[in-house]
Length: 286
Image 1 (tube, helix red, strand yellow):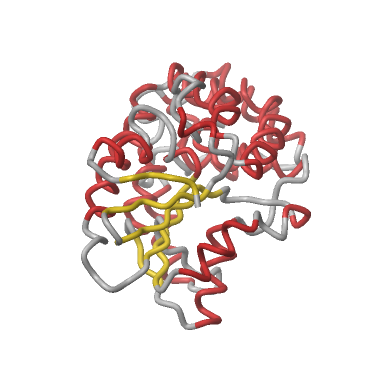
Image 2 (image 1 turned 60 degrees about the vertical axis):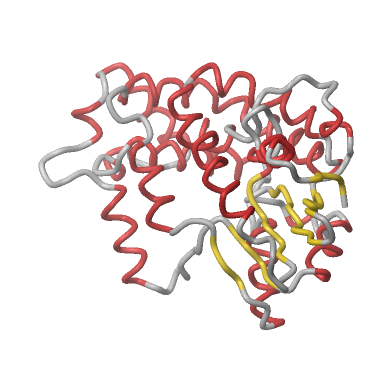
């Protein structure tokens, strides 16, 4: 599923940033430092404890920045608002948007997991694609809280301030817009990728633990960028540019910020590490 496979941006493997063997970085301007970590949003319990540099960065920080807030499952009002954005208006459904062949393929896939595709007919392709991913990864043992949730909970326990780069509404709109205008092609592509997703993510998690950005790049991003450049631009390139501006504004105060974003936002010509270097910051591993 390309929402979760859009993890890294293609870059030549000889680039020095990709050889540093870490997923946590110091971004420096004079004596001022912002810490930047690349995360995985879903991790099996066996992947804890996390690499030591994450705990070091958290201990050094005075404020934590995450991509966006996540509502509690018990917050029914927030959950209902999310679902409304991810659903079609009354009178429209996924079955009307997909070709007969693709809809039948989708139905056959969900049937393997005991789910009737009709239960998802009111939802937009982006939400359905997320469900494909979660089912496939759960079947291969990839589930549970990720790095972001772990540190959000830890910050709450320690009463450390938590701030966000984006709103939840913005991220939901990103998902809601996925595949719009090419629904059949989008779902067909995601179905074709399901078999490889579990093994690919296990390899990627291993590379992430080692801080091997070049390996993650090789595993995930090359195909993802080529298959859907429009989605890649929306999910990564544009957001990295906005986050660059926000990170620049973190300098010149007394806070010590730790910024945690998906690992796919770090490498590449349009990734945060290169963008920060180009903006004049010193970027080096923690």
